[in-house]
Image 1 (cartoon, helix red, strand yellow):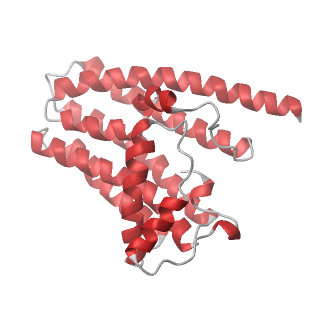
Image 2 (cartoon, rainbow, N blue to C red; image 1 turned 120 degrees about the vertical axis):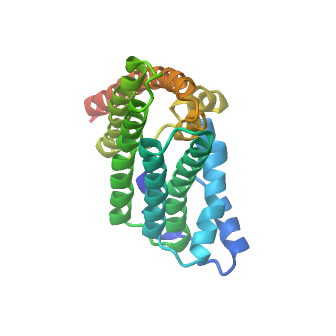
Length: 252
């Protein structure tokens, strides 16, 4: 989540909504541009998050409380993957909980916009939760696969590599925003095609991949493919960010 999810200038703050329908309509009118964002985040997660944000707002929840709910839901999913038997029921539960945690992670910023309570402290909390959750998911996969003798060691250890890749990508994105004066990803070069091409990098894809957790060998194989695609994306993304920051520095 970027700063515009949390901190907005006064003219952009929304008027308090009295009813759920009013809150939903207000959020629909001020959605951030989606061009360039991965397909699931762009067309599914953000849209569903409006409903959760409107409900949270009407329930009187603060953005930080929604962030805490997101962390709690994700923590339950992480615990299931790390400690529960890899059954189809656990797989469905983990996937749904991970997806719900991701949805709430988008909803907290929308609650902040709706209530006019965005803050730097709230953004900090959101990023801290993401910084902990990001590696925790992959470490849980590693621990969970340790109990699966049918999974090859190199597929199991791929979770450790995925942990490094995910943390590197997260840090790269956050630092690029900070160092470039919070210039967000360009919308000029990102259309529908880019949204589909970056789908493997979408958090939503990782969330729903856990539907395969009940069949560890299938999960591990799909997870390894996703790791490869994310590694390629990370390398290209980091190269692009480095060039952007270098050009910006040379022009200043």
